[in-house]
Image (tube, rainbow, N blue to C red; front, side, top):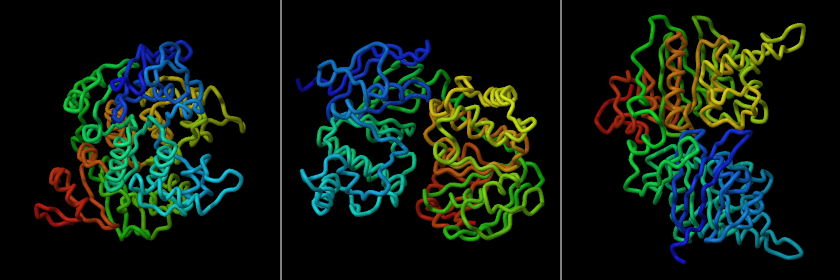
Amino acid sequence: MADTPIVELRAIEKEFTGNKVLNSVSVSFQRGEVHGLLGENGSGKSTLIKILTGVYSPTAGEILLDGKPVRIASPLEAHKFGLGAVYQDAELVAGFSVAQNVLLGSEPGRFFLSQRKIFEQAEGILAEINIKMDSRRRASGLSAAEMQIVTLATLFQRRYKLIVLDEPTARLSAYEVELLFRIIQRYREQGITIIYISHRLGEVQQICDRATILRGGRVTATLEREEITEERVTALMVDRSQSQLETYNPGLARDEPLLEIDRLETQRLSPLSLTLRAGEVLGITGPLGGGMEQIALALGGVVPHRGTVKVNGQAIKVGSPSESLAGGIAVIPEDRRKQALFPTLSISDNITLPMLHVLTRAGLVSSFRKRSYAEDVMSRLKVSPRQPDKAVKFFSGGNQQKAVIGKWLKAGAKVYIFVEPTSGVDVGAIKEIYDIILHLAHEGAAIIVISSSIKEILSLAETVFVIRDGQLVHSAAKAESSYDQLLAFAIKGRSHIGVAAA
């Protein structure tokens, strides 16, 4: 029947050691639709998707494919049913070419592989979904965005019926987002169903036909496109009103300079000088890849640079991450999974790692002191669930971000640099992370927030910079900066309302 959903989940439940994370969840996905899946971190989205793709088995309920009950006992079975997912940290076989990755497991040739045919067939697949990319490029040289796109092409080649996209634009530029949306439209035309998981409501409104909202492991509503508004979705996602989720920096800067930078320069950043006072939050925005990220990489001791850096009036070396931290600078990077956490270790291990020298007695780490330290940090940052021995990979994105902040909370840092601090974080956890940042400023730390979200910058900062093509194109107090003005500087390098860059 034409109206039969391609996939239907009926009364799905899932328990982990007595904790019910999904409670009678029912949702259907139509053939060729883009269906948003929204909810706070911890609402059950990830668990639901893992059941659909065979990672978990449901405690109760059933899954129907084309109207017929099926049992998806493993990711391999999900693959056979034509169900797959593309995650934020999509990975390919690094030593293989794009073409070899796209056709992996489906190479032409029965007894021997023809590289010429592999490239020809892969280029045909890429052309079919309007992806312009050299199929001979090595996967090891691809950006994160390109890896996602190649993974999409792989699933398209295998003629999947349903594909889950998990926060697909979290690390994409505006151009790459447009490319992704064109690919999604092509998939829709082919009758492929997309489940679109995102915390960016504007994208959901633009690309999704319907959206289902989860809260506390239950479905609160499934909305048609015209019903998807910020007010409606927020009310369905969280138990707090929109006003309770808003953040405003009342002005926490003190008189004394804390961070002084003189002509900081990298290969992709022109000389930049600034003075940041104790308690001050500096917001830096601009296009992704436009140079703003270089500030964190240089001050974190990750990339070669020139210039002078002073903390509390003393010149410090930032030639390595350890030198940077020793000088009082803590960097909370964007890619927490790869740059800041050990996913298979417990959240306690991750939080206490920089402080083991304090928790050690007679050359041995005190398990009691370590656990007490971790529990204190988790309590202060409202990490949930309060399970210090649980592997950090099983925590939500918001709680993982809190764990990264918690690593440096008692490490004596005077300057905190946050890079895309709420990337992949739900609306409720965003507010909590904002409160943590402003609390650090209130305690006298100097804060730099580097974010492509202008709304985020205007919520947190007292002073605003815009960096484009490695150049500082705008510098002003937050009170003198509007959203439209900052967007114009970020896009064009100049204001469309005639305000000169500093």
